[in-house]
Image (cartoon, rainbow, N blue to C red; front, side, top):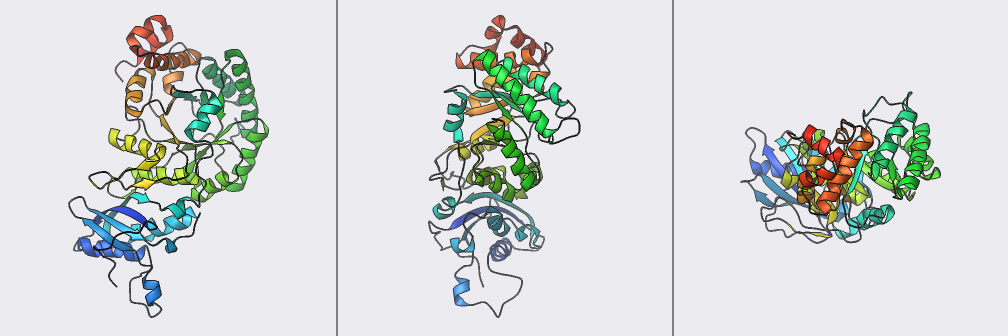
Length: 422
């Protein structure tokens, strides 16, 4: 059975995938494309006695081949997928096909989810508007800090550093990706002590502050931790979505606890970094939005993490937009998001106050900027590091250069001197 049909026009209800394909040695591009569609839908390595005309209607179809860019587009009938089951969907379009012999490299670049499938997922509970309302911040970028060192501080030390961050003017404090429930910093104790410091900082500054405790764990334990956060008047939870897995992510979203879900992407590069093989960060971001995270790390462009300007910008537009148009090169598929709220993009990794103007210029005001070393590495201390970051944001919002603004902000002046060459 041939799975290539270049005359086929995808239906609105079809799920469409864009793949980058590198055939194995002595395998034609067409054969590789055919095998991908076959293996990801109804086919296998040999003819089947059990195949019939009705089943054949469910086959995936390669409807576009672009040998110049090594791209193919494949349309899948929606009947192939269980609604609201992301692991099941990915077992088809991003499953066995990565291991077939006919391809040397294969990368899922993008997915167009149809309306019926989109309607079967919750999407973000809060989204950008909800988070801005929660934090009472209308226009400026949100700013926060990851507690550093990422592991090692004891519970009260952690809470004290968090307080200094908030006192210095930042909105958010976040656990790092590998800080969970450790002997020297127990999860429940950390939540209680850090939220006490949050309340203290709110009273002193008059600003709304939030703490993102990392609840990443086995699914049942994760739910218990999320409920503990809620019971102690927390407003946020953080999860490592790649190591956690899509099933667990759906579970925490479907619990509908009324907590903002912050998605850390630790481990994504194992899937995304090889531009010839794996799954693009764009695809991962779309999956996360559909399931229902409220905030997602997308890269920084200007910091320490890998990811080019166009790639990061494309991801931001995808998770924030209501209608994404296909690009002229055919490397991004059209996507209508219907009822799904936008996700707040997060830039984190190697940031310091001197990078704020460039970052805001590239990604706009709807961005959450998170600083680790860029706060705690300030020679004057954590609170001063936070003041330097807040000052840089205020300078950008007032359209004043950092050099000029630093004349009235000693903390910013020190930061600019320390990181002037980075």
